[in-house]
Length: 148
Image (cartoon, rainbow, N blue to C red; front, top):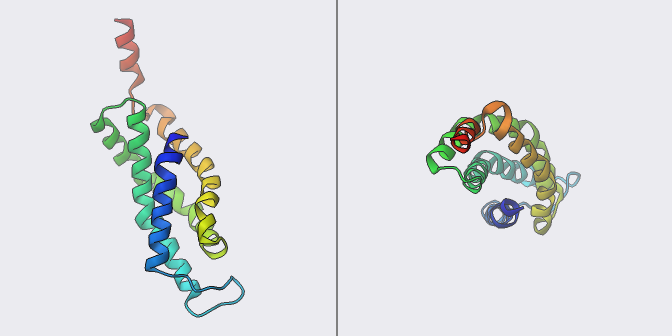
C-alpha cells in the first residue's frame, strides 16, 4: 500500500506523462490505423518495459527491503540478484498488457489500469523476494540473536 501510493503511482504518472510528451500517440484505435499510431504505441511499450521498468523494479526491491528494516548493502545485493530474472518474467507478461494499455486506455486512466495488474505483479514480486530462503533478510541470523 505504501509503495503503491507514495512511490509507484507518482513514478508511473510522471513516466507516462513524459512518454506522452516525448512520443505522442496519434489519436486512433486498433482499428483506425492512423499513420504512426502503432509505432508510437510500440515505442511506449519498449520504453515502459526496458527503460522505466528497470527503474520501477529497482525502486520496488530497494523500498521493500528498506521498509523491512534491512541494511542498504543487503538490499542492493538482493535487488542485483533478483532484477534480471524478474525483468524477464515481467517482459513475458507485461509487454502485451502494456500494449493494450497504451493502445486502448486514455492517458489519465493508465495509472489506475496498471494499478490493477500491479496488485498481482507485486504479489508475485513479494513471493519471489521471499521464496526458498532468498529473502533479503537472513531470518536464521535474526532467530539466533533473539535466542542469545
